[in-house]
Image 1 (cartoon, one colour):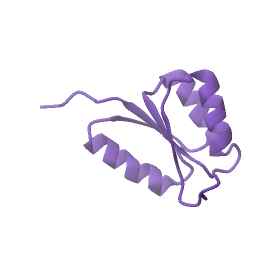
Image 2 (spheres, helix red, strand yellow):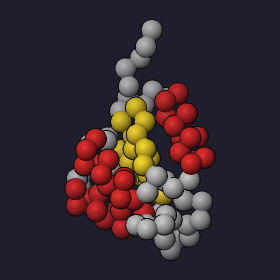
Image 3 (tube, helix red, strand yellow):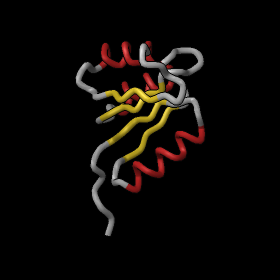
Length: 92
């Protein structure tokens, strides 16, 4: 018996291993998983896919997570965004 997905979660992260790990966890927990490996692709996915939530890496080449967060909130201020990082600081 296949269970209905709990929601659509978009992960925007430039680390392939992180994306693979989060993919497994979210699917196991019953969420539909969407991914992008950079900020520009992530913004396109937000516009095209309308995810229920976004997990967003702070440190990425090109558009960093802080800029992507600002632009996501311009697209849809109601999308919950969780910032993640292995290299962040308290100030960030």
